[in-house]
Length: 337
Ligand code: GLV
Image (cartoon, rainbow, N blue to C red):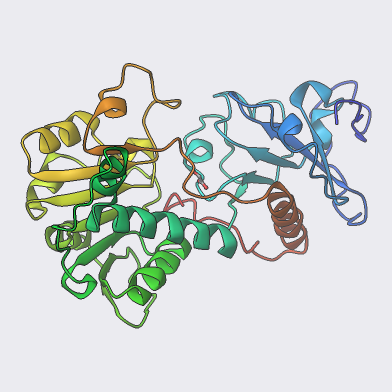
């Protein structure tokens, strides 16, 4: 896509950039890709959508003609050149790196990807980790290496095991459904308390996270990262969890106070943890998590959306915005997700 030229207007000689004409809904949407660590244009080059023309900032001839962006960990000043931006879409379910960007203009609509398929993938990932720890699959893998046939472990029945979910959005609901189908007792902390699901006990309100953690043999974190949830997985929360509980951390690295988890594991209060997200990604080679015997590390791969689905949702959210509707993927900027 590097050869793409910007179908923008000539830059004005002086004065503020004129607002582009948004009435032409047939023209491809000029979308600038804003990410400090990644070249999103290169990432998306196999997955074009005829409704979207994706460009890098250095390919934009007229910043005033840009009304839409996709972003993932944008630079602090990433939005400064674009006075007419109307919508910014995350390329993922999370919008934290966009919300935290100091140059994000206050009136811009922020959207995120809401993908049932991605949520089902997350559900499978979470269920796999619950099973892995509950059924001690790691021991069987070790035993296989030693040609050891050991049937001695008797796992509790799923109906005797409580899985607590932190977060009950699309991902949480799909994960709850999968776990209920497998026979687990499922509790969920939901900020709004609006959703209901058969077989799931939902707790909401200020004490919900702690109340779920206090009863969870397996605690699965699927919360969005906001000012309210940053550092929520800390020593105080771990102390309320039942002895021998397991943390399955699939939210954002900044939810977890990493030294507090190491301390809870090392004193034996928590039995194990599965970690897919980290404060520092890629996880540095000297992180104690890599070699920890009771930690499973995966490289932020719990769930993915296809690139064509991302571009499809960007086009649809933008079309809704231009039509004067609330885009289906719009986030609540006050809530932060
Ligand atoms: C991945 O981390 C996402 O936000 O979807």
